[in-house]
Image (cartoon, rainbow, N blue to C red):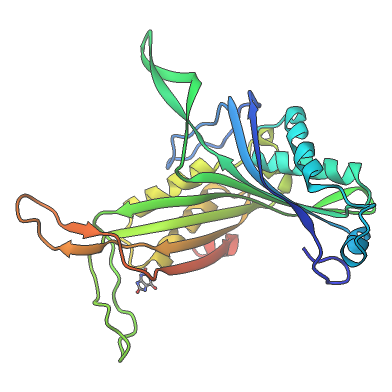
Length: 315
Ligand SMILES: O=c1[nH]c(=O)c2[nH]c(=O)[nH]c2[nH]1
């Protein structure tokens, strides 16, 4: 975070773990053909938050060791935890905006707040009920799989506060497509040892983030235009499933196209992918069908790409 004088100056707290039970359920999603996801019960609403605050008044804490303006980062942690008890919304983006605004209202020496969150995904578990298995609402599985993310940056203005940046996202999505991916036609020169492949077992790690045309849609799911990370996750695997991929570059572009088509309320979508394609050890199993693979050796490749609605023109 840079301030007016373009100097970097901020401080804050990381690993602020917040677990709120019985938050407002996430509903009102726009249903899309690629996803059966209809909402989260938010019986457990969990986040690992990182907060950074800035303001010119903090300069003497750095230059003179003068702590008179310093809100202890320990107090910031307490502040965020208490605000989780006051939050009436259903989204992490909304909570970050709510807690950030409250910080600016409470501490005049702060002029900017940036918060990011890794949400903790709690999987609903099926339990036997009167009509077969039904969704339990008491015991949840703490998921180590992909998880939703959120980011909000706000600043004090003449009128009050303004959101400078916002983002929803999904991190650590890991997808493997067994057959139906190629990589060929790339530059061949004296440095090239990689053979062309027409049926590689493509394993990718994917982080995706998006921002909205109207920031309120990211904060307040009651407006009916919130995009759940699970829906983008499902678009990613559906596009991967449906289409032959000539490269990861093209695959993420197509995922982005589909997401922007389904959700016109989005302004931009960004990708960071890793290539973790398995190494083929046996082209043909000795008995039965199939091949044998192992983890790839380092190093790994990566791609970054952002898209807006302009990328849909001419479709
Ligand atoms: O999808 C890919 N894109 C690349 O740019 C690349 N480079 C590479 O070695 N393998 C791959 N795969």
